[in-house]
Every structure is written in C-alpha cells, then in structure tokens.
Length: 215
Image (cartoon, rainbow, N blue to C red):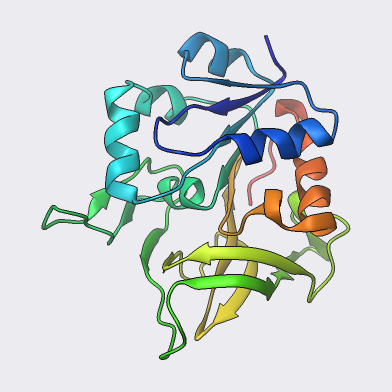
C-alpha cells in the first residue's frame, strides 16, 4: 500500500495533485477503499466543484466516518479544505447550508471581494501565522509574501484555526488546521516552487511528528 493516499472523492480531477506528489518522488496512490485510506502514512482530501456535490459523493461512498476517524496527517486541498469545516453556506440546489466533515471547528462562506472580480483566481500572497515564534510545520521555509495560486469564491474566515492568511477584498484563511487535519485554500500543485515546498513539508509529516501538536 502507498504511503500517501489521495482520497477518490468521485468529483475531483485528481491527476494534477497526484503528479505534483510524484514529481517529489512520493509513493502515492488514489483510492476510495477505507482499508487503503486508513493504512496510509498520510492522506490527501482533494476537491473541485461545489461543497454540496462533494459531500454527497463522500456520503455515497460511505467515507464520512472513515475520514473523521483518521489519526495520521490529512491535507485538504482547495474545496477539500472547505469540506474539513463544520458547514458551508454554499447551498447548491438545496435551501440549506451544506453540512461538512466537522474536522476543524470553523465554517465557510462566500468571499466578500469588495467588488473585485469573482472568483478569486490567480496568484496572491501568503502570510503564515506565527505561533510561539514558528509557523505551522506545513509552512516551514515559506516566507511572508510568497505567492501561491488560488481559484475560489468561498472562504474560511480568519479564526483561531488559521495557519496562513491572504487577502482579496477581505482577509481570509489561506490555510487552517486542527491537530492532524490541515487544509489549504490555494492549489499547491499549481504554485510552482512555493507549492512544492509546502507539499514536501507535508510529506515529512507522520502521526508521531504531529502527536500532541494542535494548531
């Protein structure tokens, strides 16, 4: 079994994320098999499209409790990060908020762009949050003002669970974390050398290295 497993959520284009890890020499595979996911050293939760469709697919694959029970490092990417929160105000065809995985106690709402074009698409700067004079391990070696690539209309607001910030019309969480669960709103696989460094940092993480390390 692969050390790093990308969860096949059924609604994501997984190839670019997989290729980014393969370029770093990672032993990576894509699976929706609970046994394979649970056995991985680390797990990626990808996502494109809408939160309602993604959560419906995850429920249909009976992966909600599997993901919630993971104790190894888990990285959500873009929509995958948003799915880690408690709920999203992205409603799709339903007239109610989307209940997400509840892994990180924050929520997702539409980005207030202050009349800037929507979606927020393109390169923007990161501000890693410094805690006890150190950034979160995911951002080791990443500098204030480094650029990464975003494509999104919804965001997690700034909170105690923010580990990096960015700004587009308003400040928002570029990354959030809670224990072994962490997510990035941007696309590290499309973010050149900075994105590759962030993925390398994730590949160094193990259950043991994160034990006792809440965000």
